[in-house]
Length: 458
Image (cartoon, rainbow, N blue to C red; front, top):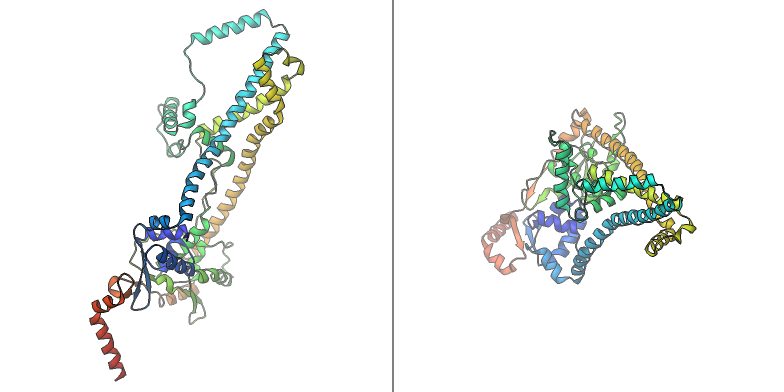
């Protein structure tokens, strides 16, 4: 068995004693799926069932549930091994783009320099040119060396060293300016090679878990109102058009259907004909949890072009522009007649670049074109994100001053609000001990139950 990772995380966060409603609310899972998964997990991981006198079921798991599953399942062991391997492979893929960019720039620049020297020698050079070149060389060697680059080879691979150096550069550039909140947020969190990948492809979808987050918030809202809600209370967490005060009740009720199915709810009709929604499965809890406050509405996060620091992004862009420049310069300088005048090493490098010129050219152009297109896409996506967030906020604001119809439904929903905590004192049966032992321990309560039944018969 390979259990749902969301279910395992929910069991762990809820201290290994849960109901199906607890897991469904914590992980946003379908209640029926949670019941099936919990039964299977209890069977595989030596869990126990606790049944209350009212028939409510609680699942109790050992603290080392993941270790038990991993030891019992070869599939989970292979999955854990592949995850470790994939993390290494993906990191190598990420830094490979930066390595190829730097290698391309260096190789093509060397080829351009070799061709340039030959062209200058062909034209005979001038004494003045040589004198100025020698003077520049002497001036350069007389001055202390200062690298113009904001990174060394060590910086490319070591994150902490890069972060310390970046802090010193910022302090040297603005010694009198304290760090602002934005500066702190934009401080480097990745090394330079990772920043190249981030600049090129971004850092993933910030709302990849939006579906699960939506279901968790809806379940939290239902539990916060003790298992009985109106459609208006759930609307800020759905994808709905802008509020139309004259006609939105019917559309809201339609959007409640998948929520009813997922959390085993049922509609109830108020005396005035309004609908409220009752979720008995979410009213049963293994214990009284301290639930965090629920946000006013479901807020999507904006897309980021890159999480690399501004300094890193600037240097990646400069390297990309330099790469395009040297590739174009190579095409302008290259001539078959020049190759014979190069050294053997020079002929090899120039021949290599010429043979793969279109590969170098395509890679160089793509390094500027892909981020440019992605930047335009991110702007459009963030505009849509902002629109959806504004629409959800409109629905949330409707609850600040509810209409008389909505207020009547809110009042009626309170009749179905309830909360059931299944404690150890409420248990009628548990698989932790055998049935005979439980009957001996609960002999007094069993006798009382039989007396009550006899009295009812008489």
